Length: 361
Image 1: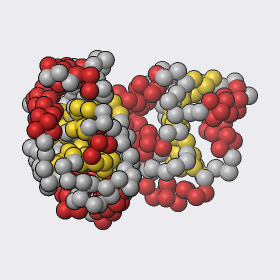
Image 2 (image 1 turned 60 degrees about the vertical axis):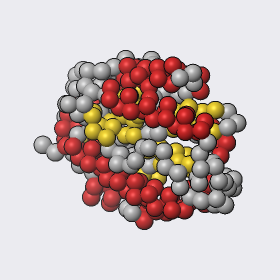
Image 3 (image 1 turned 120 degrees about the horizontal axis):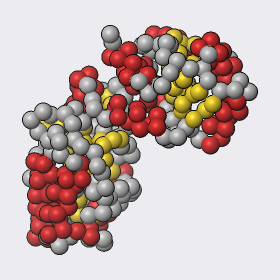
Image 4 (image 1 turned 180 degrees about the vertical axis):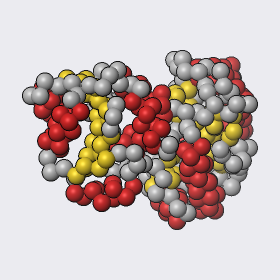
């Protein structure tokens, strides 16, 4: 049995009978279950079959790359979909609530109602898929690790370019080029390469602002490899760092390391978050750490599990999470240190192989 056949069988566990079907429209989920990623298409899965519906533009590629499913090239999606549903005598179709727009849901619902087929998008399917994807298999872990290696090599090359006078926008462009040059399909997100006072913005946007001596430079970066993402952040100082900058950096590093030591199977994600947050709060900077300590990474840059104070998810071996506490002082500077961790039977494996002590370029 191939990995994709196994995933499809686990998806079928959601179905309560032979007259139910799952309809996926999210390209990421379709890629997870078939191995074929494309911008448009529909995957219909029943107890007895799986069909990937796509138009002429993707037909040949789908037949070459999709696994575990029949490829159906349609001229009218609704007609081909109804034919398949009629063939299997389906009475109820479950769709992804988090992906379908209201207009798209209405379109499908009207078409299916004409055949007396119910369409449900109540969130249960989304939760089921999330639970399937939350633990990575070996093939997924290898791809995430490859994405990380690409990103790290590019980041280390970029550090040679970080010097007074260089703009944030230029550094972002160079970093993206270095990753693509090393084999990345894309960057994981809009790269964050910010400096000076802008480092107090957790998701600051690179601009024509230029690096100056005495600045912190924050780089939040990631690469995509065969559909899988990486995510890392490092904060470095340019030429020199003040006593306050060193103090804040040391607090964030302590919080980050303590959270890392907490990660192991059986631990609540909220406990990992609390470990980092308590250290920052005890140091007097709790109000300057306003985001969660981490999140899952995989086919999406942000996915389950979420490492926050509200999360009741229990860590399991094979989960990927980030560990990224930060302190952000408005109008002054900010520090964030982020690693990507794989939960193992014994604890965790850090997928990031970069120094964390304060680097002064």
